[in-house]
Image (cartoon, rainbow, N blue to C red; front, side, top):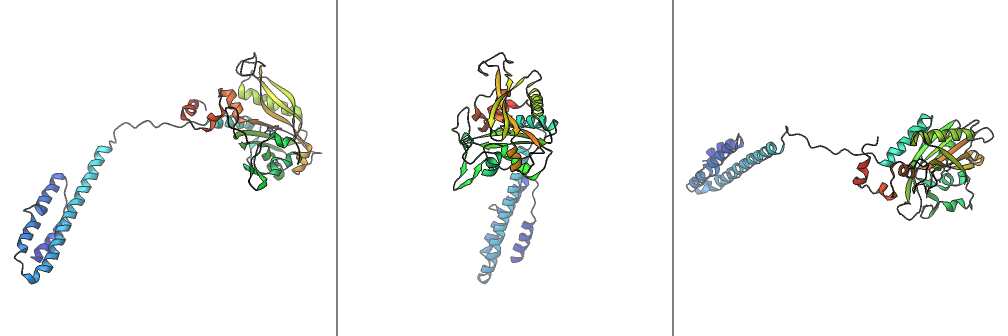
Length: 339
Ligand code: DAH
């Protein structure tokens, strides 16, 4: 009997079934009431008692292996059948929604491209900065009231470490390492401790531009600004410069463009003035050049800085700043056609 069981064990090992019917036939042959295993169980009664133990072990092994093999074959079918149902390779693919670029990224790119055409290259700096790069090197005196103009986030227990409040800090980073000619454009995120509302946020984005060389004049600045405004807002755009104050430039100015919504006629957006402010600028203060190791007797430069959100609002009439950081796809997907 043991020989018979051993040969069945081998047989079971090699069982194959091409389909569910064949599998069922195998189950009947081995495991049904009249199957091989049941018959052997019946014969087991007649086994001499001193052999019962050994034969019994073989018989159990056969029963388990036959069951296991048939289960395995069944699982295999289940997988395959699921495969044929789930994967219809001829079916048309679902359309995959493609993402859109964030409006701030679109506008940042546009600004950088325009300055790129004037020969400016991109420079970046850290968002966590030290006092020197954000304030002191830029001619903010230790007790200068201008420091209060910027509601700064300080790092707890480290009064020297701040989240940068403007990208002007990148000017210092570059000038410390490089002698003129310098022509850089610095896009980046900045932080200010403001209550969040539709018109203010605790972080936003700026682009800074810096040009330092021999004989750089205010006329060069004005020319670059006019080119920039026309490229960004259209050739009909006019600019006007108003005197202003920044510690790091002298003289300083703020630039308005003719309101791109009403064409300068006056509307609620420009508060009926026909002009909207878009950036600050000026001639780099000699102290700033000297602080960074650039000889202000030889070199001069201009700088300018603008908020990307503000420009984006002007271009796309976004009226709530919070939309830029909420990741609401209903807002974001409207920029699909923008390049
Ligand atoms: N840093 C200024 C701000 O955050 C913007 C600015 C004004 C940058 C004048 C400049 C500049 O480079 O010349 O408000």
